[in-house]
Length: 127
Image 1 (cartoon, rainbow, N blue to C red):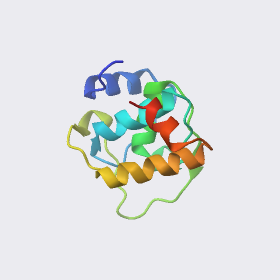
Image 2: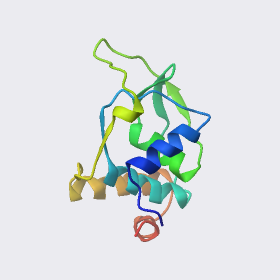
Image 3: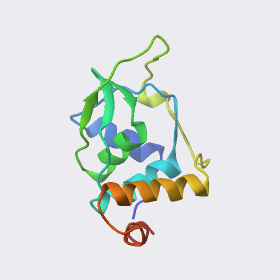
Image 4: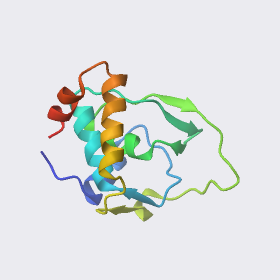
């Protein structure tokens, strides 16, 4: 499996026919990697929230779906006065882990339930 990094992400975005605009200037590579591993094994996720071409919620899922070559559904959402657009080239992709072990466990539990599968099977798929 390829180690996901900034260059690979930017390349996949450049090659995509479904480019959305980011409203975050920093994203977490470990989160992208975890979601990507799940997606390549067929794990489904909630829709991302968009306002026209802007991602409002679901940046990590959007990037992971592009990397995995899977379609992720979009749900319309509203932007706020605090919504800021960024260029993907300006986004910082950090190696720092943003999620605690407890949060990762809880997200795995939610993903297993959403996909109607045992937690152990989901965890085993993503090792």
